[in-house]
Image (tube, one colour):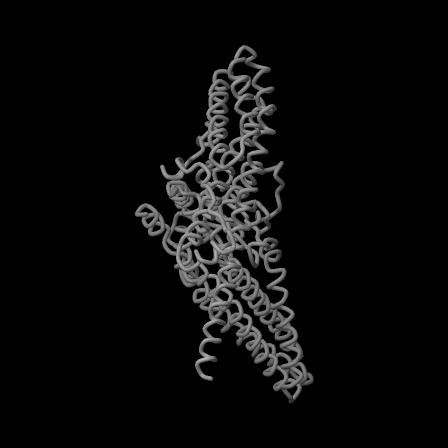
Length: 190
Length: 304
């Protein structure tokens, strides 16, 4: 009789552990998904800003056509990209294109001084750093989720209910260390 | 971090219990001296204290913001500040706090609210004018850590409860002063006024003793250690210690005084607000010292 109770007790403990672990995994997965959609929101914000910025720069520097096309290409490539790794490399192309665009703007004092350009520049800088922060948070959540999925004994529950490991967003950058987004004049002394 | 949150929630409950018990005691004293029976006094005082506690829990952030003269700013008015607050909120994985600006020239900032879902971050105009983007990010990172750790809950409740005690003590001392003045004019009149004066005097004295006690309570409940902690945690969010270091150095060297500096809200600010800048802090400010020395904070950040 006693043996039966002990066995029942053990089974109960295992069940409780299983439920707790399952819930924790679900919570982590939801948080990771939210983090991903936050990155998505900010990336979309940047896609929306690009045509405005290009138009504004065009007004002052119409002959930089090649650069405008490069940025536009990078933008449509990024919109079409699927998966964290492909998305990350497409976004990097946008970032470098935008950096060139802003560097070009440095040569046009009228453009640099226009209120429209300054507002767009602040929006872009803000969005760039939000993308960086969203990526930082997402990678942190992915790290937590992947660790729990791989480590024993939670790995048993993870396999049983098919929790999958996630890809890091832009793993090269995060491995290299902190990424500072610096798009120029807004970081200089006021 | 979870321990920090739990400890701060415990502290808040303790604060409410102490405040309510103390008010009940005063109510009992008034009832006993005044009406020859303490029960009614205790009941009235307790109800009053519970209402005040609920008020400080649910509306404490608004009271604190109003007392500093902070006004809400939109993303159109302050795009840079809004972008930075939103960015750091994303890094911390919490909703974006409401954004306020305090019309003060001294560069400083504070956070208030009760949890990350109900939080506000206020910065002074001086901070906006003197800090560049990375410095501002450092400051907001520090404030966001207070939000995450629920330091804002304890801080806001302390500010409102202590603020109420200070207000009441002033009220009682003033009414004692006025009724005392009147009584001097009719020294041989009825002694009813005499008893009122005596009671008000006694309450005033009790509250006068209470005020420094409350100051001590601030020191105990908002340990200076949490500023180091928020510095470290804030840098973890921005991943860029030089930003906060440079911001603290600018705050240290700023020549402006804080007009709205007072002991009830001093502990909330990024750096203890001072009425006399550039000098050694006065004895009164030292008594209510809520922050570690700014040099020590800079040093610790540099060692990270």
